[in-house]
Length: 412
Image 1 (cartoon, helix red, strand yellow):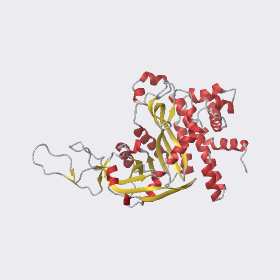
Image 2 (cartoon, helix red, strand yellow):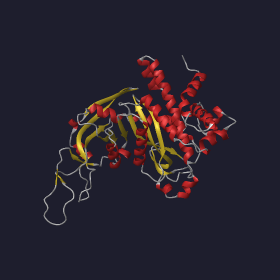
Image 3 (cartoon, one colour):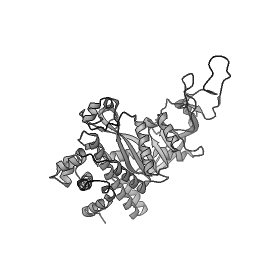
C-alpha cells in the first residue's frame, strides 16, 4: 500500500520526538519539524524561500530566524542523531567513513569560503569544505557529522571570523584532526562500527593513521603511490658506536621502496580478481594484490628518512582501465583478500549520501553566511536523510527479499 502524505507527516512527527526534546524553546520545537518537512518536500531549491513555500509560505522570516538567526546548540541533537543512526545501521559490520564534501559559492562572505579543492567540480574553486562522517552498513549510508573546515586565511582574520559568527575557540585545524575529533565525539556517544574508512586525503596522513591506531580502531584507507614502505621482514639494529655523538636511532636492515615500485615487483601473478558486491548492472569486480609491509612513518632517523612503523596490509586495486589505486589497512595478518576489498570498496556509500544530501535535500542550497546557520542547516539536512533511511529500512523489512533488494537499489 502506498504511503499517503498524511501518513508520511505523521511518521515524521513521531520520529522527531527525541530530537524535539533536545530543544529548549517552544518556537524551536515548532519550526524544526517544519524545516525538515520542507527539506523533504517537492520543491527543487531548498532555500529559505523554497522551504517556506512548502510548509509555511507566510512565515519565511520565522523560518530564517530559526535556522540562521538563533543560536541553539547543535551538540544535543547531534548526539540524538548519532544514537538513532547507531540503532539503524550500527554494529560490528558497520563502517565509519571519513570524507569531505564541498559547497560551491560565488561570493566571499559566507563562512569558510575560499579557493580550494572542490570534489564536485574536480578542481580548485570558490567553495566551503565540510568534513563529513558517515555510518554505513549493508550499503545504507547515514550521515552523522558535517563540520566546516576553516581555512588558515579565515582563522588568521579574527575580524572576518567575528562577522561570520565563528566561535572564539574555533581556530585552524587540518581536516584529519577535525576527523579525529568527530570520531572521538561518536565514540563517546556509543556509536558502534567495525572499522574506519577514508580516502587518500586522510589516509595519506601518518598522524591520522596513528590516531586511529592509538584509539584501538581498525582502519582501511587510501594511500599515496609515492609513500615509502619496508618489507615486513625488515630488522632494526643499533650500529656499533665508533666515534662522535651516541646514536639515537637504530638502522633498518633494508632500504625503503615506494609502494608503486613494491607492487610492480609482485608482477601480474600477484593480482587476483575479486568480487565485492552486486551492482545494478551485475557483479562489481576488479583485480587486487595485497602484501604485508611496514610503512616508513616511524620516528625520523638521522638521515631524515623515517624508520618502519607498524606492520600493515598494502593493497593495490587495478581497475578495468588499468588505473591503480593504493590502500593501507591494519586488518589482522590472516585477513583474506576478499575481506580487504570488501572493506575498501564500502567507502563508496558516503559519496551516495553526499549526492542525496545535495541534490534532493538541499545541503548546498543554504544562502546564509554564518557559522551557526550553516551548521544548523547541515544538521537538519542530516536529520532529513536519516528519516528517509529509516523509512527505507522499514520498507525493506516489509518486502520479500528480492523486491527489497530491487527497491533499495532504485531508491532516490
